[in-house]
Image 1 (cartoon, rainbow, N blue to C red):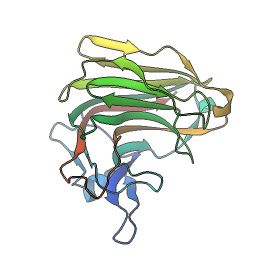
Image 2: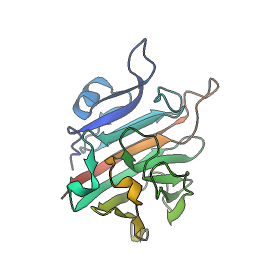
Image 3: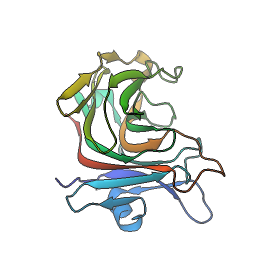
Length: 224
C-alpha cells in the first residue's frame, strides 16, 4: 500500500540552513525529493523515516525526530471523531531504547495531550488531562513489540475530548480506558503526529551511529 504523505509536513533532524540550526520542517512531497538521508519511499510504497540521535532539533529540546504531522490544526468540535491510525515497524532504536511513535499534539505549546511511546519492547502512553498540566507518568499498553515487528497504533478522540489509545501486533491487542480531556483543552487546536521522536538528549559525545529508524506501512488520519 502506498503511504500518501503529500498533505502532511515532515519534521526532520536536518538543520533549516547552514546558518539556521533549528530543525527543518517541510511538506511531505518536498521532503521525499529533498531529504533522502532521512526520508525515503520504499519499493512497496511504505515510508522509511530516520532520526540520528545527534542532529537538528526544535528550539525547546535537544532531542531529534523524524515525524509526519498534520499541516492544518483542528479543534475537538470540528468533527465528531478524530482518528490517527498508523502501522509501523521499528527497524532501529536509539541507545536509550525509547521513542515516541504517535502523538495528539497542541498548537503553540510543547506539552501534547497524548504521547505513545515504544520503550524496550513495550508500548506505553502518557495522557495529559489538563492543558499545561504536570508531565504524566506513562501507562503500559502492550508488550512484546519487538524491533522488526509490524505493529498498529491508533489515537481516537471524540468531539467531547474522550480519547482512547489502542495498539495491536499479530493476535495481541490492547486499548486504554476512555481518557477524558479536561475542560482546559476544549478551546485548543490540535494536530496528530507519528513516526519517531528520540527520547534521549544529544551531546557533543553522542556517536553518529546512534539513532532510530522506522517504516510506516499504513497511515490514515481522518476527522469525520
